[in-house]
Image 1 (cartoon, one colour):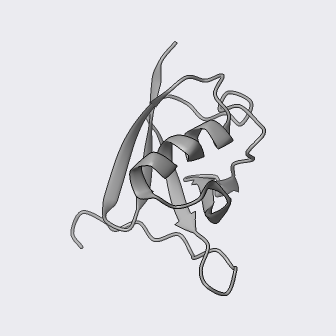
Image 2: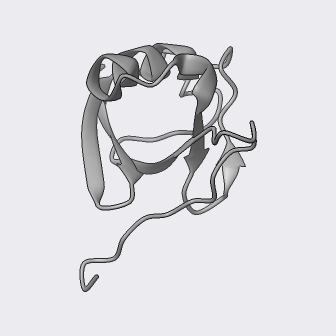
Length: 91
């Protein structure tokens, strides 16, 4: 059963078609083809719960539902991940 997840970073939103049985790693690999950032440098966080999604778990296992909003953060030069930054409409 196909579903959509909105992946947001700064002022950009990626609408990802996926399946509840796909893992977080699968989603990161799809993102890699769009943003050219290595999978190891991506972190996905479920907005609302601020839960970091684990690469080996499926979306269903992590209670990611259709039309969920997921924040994308990237690893910085100091090897730490950046803070969540999602622009609001009025920005």
